[in-house]
Image (cartoon, rainbow, N blue to C red; front, side, top):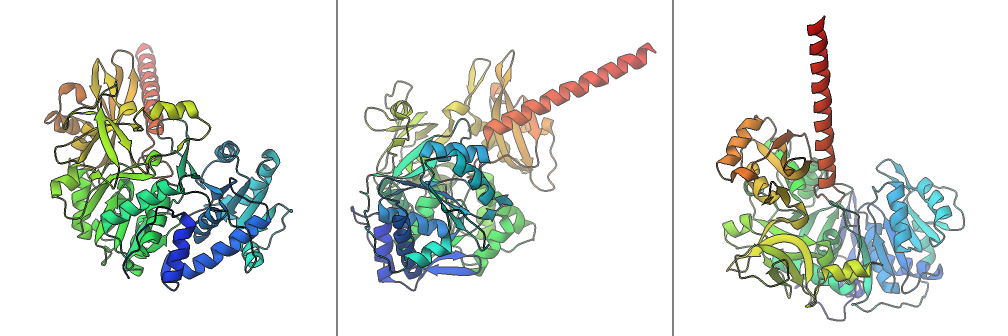
Length: 548
């Protein structure tokens, strides 16, 4: 079956209706030992929409999702679209205080949550939240326990049963109305609520699927965080648009992911560098076998180093496509294509997708010539509606020409490929010079004993900021600080060399797999304080011994 064309009037739910009518028996979602066909997904969507409508959920309301990547998450997204409501996908691993804040900030009137997952008792959490959040009128729980509830808490299966065959007033929103409120992962600051329309999400989903030439016989693996723009758009909706199948996972533990990919004969693998690095270690160490049916990998979330890209290609035997993704642009801004030259796949973020336009500007917003480094700005169908309840913050990042100021530093080469240098806010001001972390990270990661490297700026009395490299060695790798300094000195100017190198077993990550730079800086500073304390204690002890 040839993939259908997307219509300008499409909404998330209308695409499901059309797909279910065309091929109801085709597998849409794999989850554990179960599968959900397109026809079954549509029947559950209708039933849930009917019950939610009966509870008073209507157009403009917000429905929060506090779920792992389960089929119930997807069905709720489609049901909300059917009613003209919006969804607020939240990280199920949020602390209760963060969950409270995002539920309150979003004004969600209903939440669909797991009864328990990851060792967290969500029922207890929501019992407390219902007292503190008067706008939160209903909670729908997904689980198998036969528990007592008050009149505002409902079990998922009960709502499906009650809604089957029930008529309701569908009120689908316009494709351009805000539909999903996604909170940024806050790697460097406080999270913001990014409002994305159905058209935003469907655009990037369709364009990413086009890059991969996704087809109905494809099976996609590597999706475990549906609260993230990439997983919700290209992951879930991209699969839907092309009539393919998607493997959903509670987490992306390397051995489990590789096993699922082999079991369902996955052909396309999405992942972040941290996910792929863990899988490469599994395969290289002989603990797991590479999936045999893969035809492409797509790396998003953060840049993939040349060394890791080569190892991944060697392990899986397929091309690795880079993708430049932003929550504020509904995920994919640029991506590599199958057939692109190898150096473009390894050293760029690919070319802009679809109707997306990328320009590089100076601080004043003046567009720079090709091959010039400046701030990357993006305009196109994927760019957000704005930051929810933050008009000033929205105005600050959308310029007069409608371009989104990404805060990323990079350039566009003469062939139209986007090169990423780093984040403007990550730039380290060291002794009057600007150091871009990406350049130092790439050099460190090229060392055969280095698995991953992240460079951060740490406050320094004399320099302003010092350059600190946080390094994860490859398994069994042996390398010293001095050797890494000598290695970087062969390729970088003296002011770019790391002042400190901290070896770590792993790197702190956000819920979406990005490196949590704020936490890295905190760890480095804490370690530095401990080292000073240890040195002072040793000096004091030595002095005491000497005076005796």
